[in-house]
Length: 350
Image (cartoon, rainbow, N blue to C red; front, side):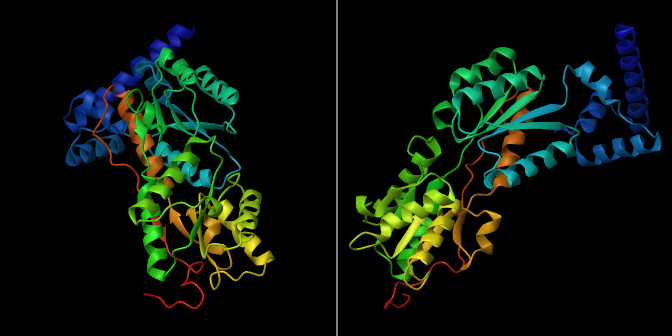
């Protein structure tokens, strides 16, 4: 019965495609491309196909099409930490793009745990997803090999060492840090500290290196006493800021590796009766929604999650079609200036 049902559905699906193709005066392949949202069809032709679909009251049979194409129209999305406010916007943007193409998304998070990451990939394969977007800072190539063996396309986020093996959505952190540094120097700051994330995390090391490089380009160096390590959370930022404020000569401005630690730094400054931005300027990274709600509103480097999601989704679609696609420029974060930065005390704006 199951096989008969499959064959009947495939015949009905094919008959409907033929009717649409005949009405629109195009090939069945063109109709399929329009239905599946695939590139390579001119806009006027697509409009003609869509009109034919509407006139015939044709509703594509998703199950039959999936069986025919050998696809489930299901994508997997793996992120680092579902509790991190960075990821909801990325998930929402990715899911919206998928929904527009009739694709469902299942997602999970690794909590930065290699074993959990391995299991996340395995479960995605078991769910028979068509492709997987791995939007995490930490990956294990051995875990990725599961997908390669199963023939499931994967796209990664900012894993430059694996760029030759897997499609990558690259992020150029240096652009944002250079803009932040230029802004602080223009205000008159030269004593600038940095709160980095755990150096066991690849993304945290990249951000620290990018900030160090930005300093070097202006003839400045990263001073050890003005560099602290946090845990990428509010508590870690607060503890790191306490350490910087305890220095005999503390910095007049601090850049942090993410917004959560910048919020912790704001809290620590407030507890120590250090006025922000009058006596201390703070810049975060990511531009989480909460950044603009802080008092003062947080100046931060915006990493556009919607663009990361769009590039990841496009890579997966292209991989399913069997091509590598055109080279894509790295995503560039940019500074958003709000109220947490100002000239240092007793200094005028340049």
